[in-house]
Image: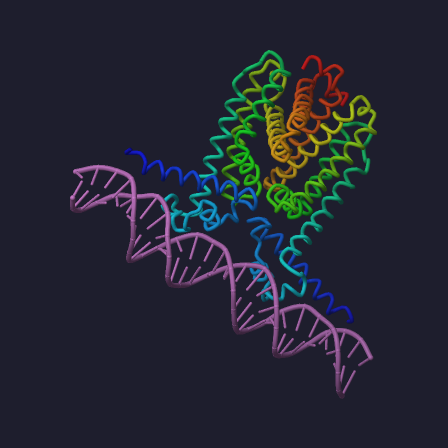
Length: 210
Length: 210
DNA sequence: CCATTCAGTGAACATGCGTACACCGAAACT
DNA sequence: AGTTTCGGTGTACGCATGTTCACTGAATGG
């Protein structure tokens, strides 16, 4: 029973993080208040300081935690599952993204919101992390047989486009009622396929006539 | 000189709106405070109530004002300027969007931020307005000769994709230093062309092989 | 069994918030 | 010239905020 004490502390810490994630969803990290978190957790405001140094430290912890979910999703998408065709890649990618967003909606909602609404430092941190995603995607695309025809700047434009599209996809998934998830996923697949068709036909058949 | 009084009032009102737009850029509409606005304007807090009924009314006015800029941009983009080729449409559209975003950066930054970070009612209002853009774009695309081959749901997917892409483009423009504007615009043109090439080749040459 | 650790408590603080009210003084109207 | 209108002022209120400090009491370790 040497772990009971630490366990209880960890449980309270988790409750604080979960409550903060919840409250943040309504009005943003900037207007998250220590006291509202404490009330939600069912603890006196000052108890908060047994777990975090300040309200800013809480924000930092939330960012870090959301990054874990983001990186987990990215590495899952990068596992080549059905690499034989672009359609296979599209289908598995959209499915994996959908699953991850559904598994941690609060984390992705947090990242999507604070990416544009956070304080400058939070915003910069999230943008940097998403830039990394974009860069990794660009190198993956470069390795694809169909990616050989694209110049480096065009590859960057494409990967940025796909990331923007997938961020929008996550937004749509989060905004949609669970019953509409399949329909939303189908629209996302269509969009991703259109983009890839555009990339495949780039500077070959499509470019001059378009 | 019968207008001096009203003029002065209008000038203060504008100063309040401008200050609010400025302060909002840093921490969002949700945490905009009446007192910080008053301080910025150089007026005592209670003077605020000579111009707006409440802090919420200010928020509403900001939303309406930003919508004016959004609608102006949309109707400018829709004026068919170089309709003869898709490339011409892409170039003129990106140029017009760039000009409008540069002309009213605060308005577009406001819309982009509050679309995901605003209170539910503000968020809903902005999403609705952007949905209208998406819908108008879909009908425009349907009228294009190249749009005839696409089914209605595919047209919706395409217009949503383009709107998402252009919102991302506006984000990039706002985040970029003015000196990098040309480079950012070039990337946006590339992305938009790729998407349109994908749409043109949809379910004809491109779809089966992709 | 006794001493210690420590998550949670409760009071207190300075500050910032939105809003109400009575008031002022100059511009505007009669 | 006299009166009214009204944008801006100053004070005051009740409430919420982040953080501090001394304290408690049960789980922990010797």
